[in-house]
Image (cartoon, rainbow, N blue to C red; front, side, top):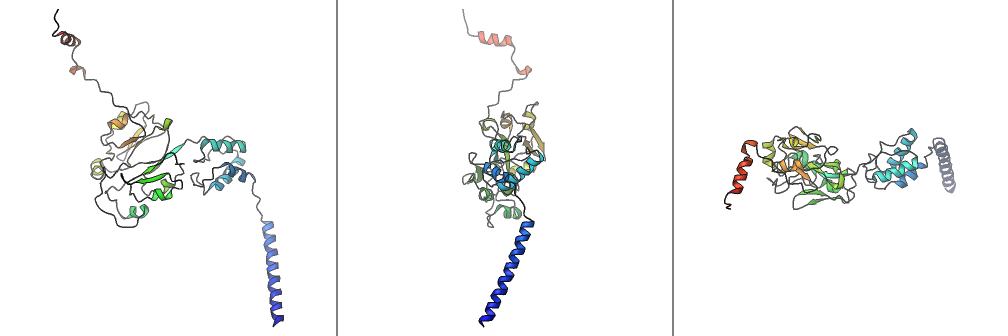
Length: 306
């Protein structure tokens, strides 16, 4: 019996040694040498592993940067959390010019607060936006509005977005947001958009994505864009930052100069800004309604005695 056990051990040991040798030879033959620059570039990246660059993590971006460096151009690759400063360091290390990274921030484009878009029914189902989006329009009836089930909040790895219980909408903390885009992908209604921070953090945007006609949109939300086009006409002719498509206005952040004129003319208050807009200047009366200068002089002299 002991002999049988001994033979079994020897046989299994020999088979294991043979397999190990085969694996060693195969690994040696097909060994892939990794560029040492990848680890060095990885050290320069912020290590957020947020996916905002389009890769699964910082290592994926580091590999892409080194490969692009071998091709002579890394300007198309970006690291949103690191910004221009990080990319400049990477470019300096790789000996190439890195592209400029305009700082951006997540913006929630929905003004359907509890006051402006009151609930018409109570939802009793899966507490997940992606699922409820396929089941019904929403408690307030708007098929384009925020569902308020916090998919965006859960997706954020930086604690930069929270649900405000008072208004019933998510609010972005600009100081914490790294513009990774996780909340953008998590929202099934495409309400969240990454927009440039702007000079001195001045930003203007249409706080609605409803493409329904004005009367229909207003039934569900009093802050909906009704496609009246007043903002388009108010935008300075040289700027032309606002366009109208499918009953919805859109402000191009690359063209907008944040003058705030469009905010004052919006009848539903659908345009939001990070600053207090200037009060509109009173428009001059038509010439036929203006009093002649002589009448003004006469009126000013009435009741005056020498």
